[in-house]
Length: 322
Image (cartoon, rainbow, N blue to C red; front, side, top):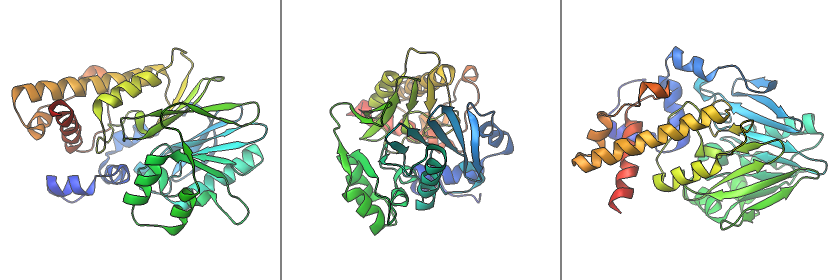
């Protein structure tokens, strides 16, 4: 990647999609190998943009591999099937990504998705949602009211098909949990905030599976562009389950279980301690971030530029000063 200024980098990497695009351009081979670690589930489909892993009977997770440079999906997502319905999770970056997942749902679960949930507004999770809608298929799209508004206001380029899919959305109550009954399998939609001002997780009790959206990034340093760090930490800790067998589907990175999730929680704690210490010393967020490093005990994290630390420190400085 050619050299760019810190200001240009911040401007170009504001969204998660840009965050991942810059990552794809900068990632050395050793870090690319981390993304290609052994799958947690059985791989039932593989494409240049990702692999679909079966977690349990009727539950599949799409693990996107954006470091290849393929921007079809960018975010992770999934399929949950019951006797009477099929839920698709995330709209992805391009409509062709959503359409691909829908076709896989029909192939694996016997029907096109009947429901779609978008976890938050970022383009890599929402911009392709129209791909689920065809002349024959009109699944119920669900999002919070704020997520819908932010997609329509901020996500570019504008797309009439995306707008139409979201204008008809069934709005998720952001004040309490709700559920989707798929027939013999219930998926809870849990409103949470922190990565953005309006996030949701999708949770199944048996087997214990959580689709985390971008509240969890496995092995990759998260994007703090919209983060409210106090709420983020609270939401991440609240999402952690006691069951050791729980499978966590992150917004980005490979599937994880308790050890990977706890490592992420610990990493967020180190960022908080570093930011609070720098703020107390009276240095700028940029200066504090330049002096910061994650402890070796937390293992390797995919970090492509120290500006990502600066963005995290800036988010913490806003919270501390408010």
